[in-house]
Structures are given as C-alpha cells and as structure tokens.
Length: 482
Ligand code: MLT
Ligand code: ZN
Image (tube, rainbow, N blue to C red):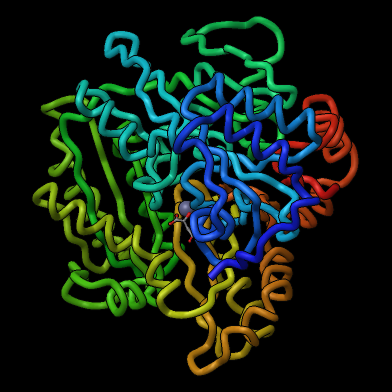
C-alpha cells in the first residue's frame, strides 16, 4: 500500500487548496488520504508518493484554472490519466510537495467524422472507449496496448505509447493531427486542427507528445482513424528459434506487407507463466515449443482471402523448418484468446513475483543475438533468474523482463534491479539499440537518459524544458534530472 502519511500544511499552502476546491466545485477535488492514495502509487508498486490533493477538473478551462492557481503559488502539478505507467511517470513525490491533476473527468468524444477519418476526443477517455467510439462509426483507431481498458488518451499521447500494432500503424504520435494543451502558465493552446497537410512552422504538437506531461498538459486531441477492417485473422505459431521468427516475419512481409498488422514474440518461459497464473488460458497447439509468435493480418477488403494466404505462408514456413506447428483463428473468440495469451504476460509476471523490466529496442536483425547475450548477462548477475522476454518483435522492441528466482526474497532480488538493467543495457548499447523503446522515462530512467543522451541532445532537451516550463512546475522529477 502507498505511503499515505499526511502532508504538513506548510508544504502546500492551505489557501491554495481552498482556492482550488472553490474553483473545481463539488466532486472536483479529493483531499482525504484514503481517496488520494490510489493516485499516489503506481501500477507496478515501485513508488509510494504522497499528495495533499487530487484535482479533478471537468473541462479544459478548469484544467487551465488549476494550472494558473498552482503556478501563482509555485506548487508543482503531476498530470495523471489512467495511471498505468511502467516507469512511475504519473506519481507524485514522497514529500507531499506536488498535487496530482487527474484528467479522467475530461471524458467526452467531441466529434467523429467517418469521411475525414478523424476523432476529436478529450484526454480522459480510455483508449478502449476511444476504440469503441471509432468502431461504432465503422472506423478503426489502431492503437492497442495491454492496459487499454484503463489507460487514457491523454496519457497514451503524453507517453507516445507504442503497442501491438506499431508495425503497421506506427506509435501514438503517428495518429495525431491536432492537440489542445494547457501550458505551464495556464494559457490554452488550441491546436485542434485536423489537417493532413499543414506546413506552418515548427510542429509543436510533436513536442508535447512523448514529453510525459513535463512540457504541457494535453486536454484533447484529433486522432487519425482508418477504415474498419472487413476481415481480421490471427495465427499462433510455434518456432524453433528467434532466427526462425525473423525468417517468418520476412516471409509474411513479402506475401502481403499491407495486411500484416502485428508480429509478437513470446518465449516458452513467458507463456508458461501465463498458463500457470491466468485462469481460462490454454495453449492452442498440441506441443510446447521454445518460442512462439502471434501474427495478425487485417484488411478493409471483404474479399482479401486472408486465411488462405496465411495458411499458404505457414505451410511454406513449416516446410523450411521455420515453424513447427501453428493454429489459425477460426472465429473472433479464438482470435481474442490468442491475444489474451500475449496480453496477459505482464499480469502473469506480476503474479509470479517481483520483476525487473527492460523495455528495449534493437535493430530487428539483431534480435537473436540480443536475446542470447542479454539472457547470459542477467544470469551472471542473479543465478537462477527467470528470463521472460516477449513483445513487439516486428518493431525490434522486446520486453526483456526478469522474474525473481523461485524461493528468493523479493527485496533481495529487487536490490539487484540496477545491476540487471545495466547488464541488459550494455548489450543493447553494443547493438545500437534504445534503453526505453515504448514505456518512456518517468521516474525510473532519468539518470539513464542523462547518460545515454549526454551532449547536445540532452542540452537541447533542457533548453526546451526551460522555455516551456521555466519554473519546473509540470511533472518535476520525470524525464529530466533537475
Ligand atoms: C506489453 O507490451 O505488454 C507491455 O508493454 C509490457 C511489459 O510488461 O513490459
Ligand atoms: Zn509493449
């Protein structure tokens, strides 16, 4: 449970709390520690912050008013959406000096235009609800992440979430045509344009996307949609090696690159945890294998013949020894059950004990070498460690996670977190990769960012932060070290 120790009144002035309460009205602010506690700790349980109040504005104007009042009192704000960050990106500091600003009540779909293929939506709508709004208009919002039932659009954009369909549709930033942002001084930038072409100076929206709430607070966005798929099919394939996974990916691309939506990797160890800890899951194949891939194809053409094409590719891959067994979904329910095996990996790992996550990327051809070297590096730090790699192989993004050895105390295992991350990152660096592919920096990785991006790149980031948030009032302690 989070640390809910009361904050001393001297940290956040009572007059500010009173002014915020008056501005937000009934239901607009939480101050009881039992109510604020869930907002002060993160999903992974890594950080236990403390806050005097959670602000719950219901409109952009109210967000702006909160920012103005806090800026005048020099009290920092931590913007928060669904609070599903993997890197502690949305939790306040332990000392009670920061207020949480929840965007959850900004939950309106403002407009949806199926001809324009655009969705104008507020920050507090969950990703799942946004997908459903698109679906109701026969469109597709092709952003998909495991936490989509809780994660909210504002956070998804502020962190430039990646996810399961990046291979075909790009990261969150590739979906955004326009943004509405409350700036650090409380002014509102209405950049909710919905133009495909707009070459008018610096592309400001891209600054805020991925800035993790440190440059401004995203309150609404215009997202690019796609036509709804007429056909969608998935395959669950058993593979002898990571090299075979790359060969299969290549084969699928050559067959029909436009239809390939996802190519996800799972190891035997990861799948075993899912089957052991998640009720109702079962292996859709006759035999276990050392590696698995989940492949999804989709097309807006009703006559695309995806199943026949996929079966032809899988048969050729089997003949070449790249695939040892495969199941192709025969219904939507079966397709969903394949995805469940992949999407429950994080939860299964959480249930299996303490874990250390490495959300890394390397060039796709380097994945087999990365998997072998990183596994050896982890085992050298903690003998008996459970190596559980999985993720978005098609994007070169592997969640190279470690689970504590059976019988080891969680605290003793977590004491090795830094050494484990360093060991993996050394391999990542060597292969020209990134230490944070899609989860961002948050509170967990500012020191890594400072060392990996040292030099002109980090200096530029600092200058941007100083220009947009000179008093460092927006999500301090995240992304950049102070
Ligand atoms: C996922 O793809 O399921 C999450 O990004 C993963 C994680 O637990 O590292
Ligand atoms: Zn992921």
